[in-house]
Image (cartoon, rainbow, N blue to C red; front, side, top):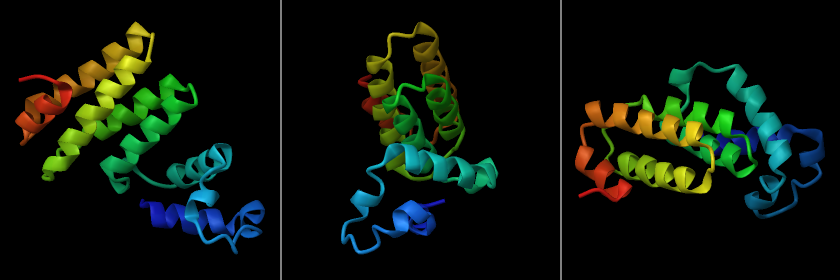
Length: 137
């Protein structure tokens, strides 16, 4: 599922359709509760393999930003299970894990993130990119 599809779905929501004249899609996604409601409905209809790993990572950050560490961790774990052939993905997941761990006071949350990263490190084709983004040498 891509952002373009999310925007298309958002435009179909009655309270959003009034904003159709807005030239900037950022205005459509500025209402986090509305976006999450639409995303939850869309995600419920999809299987995990239909969601792009970077989309899952973005959801993890979004849930974290609204204080839902359980869902944030669940989305991060799903994202970390993907073995992507794109080098940039490993940098993204490494930077996200550092951001999430630094921002949380929960030892359980940090441990869950670190565990998912360690599992990914054991199978990732671009381990050096992931290690670099984690601040490791």
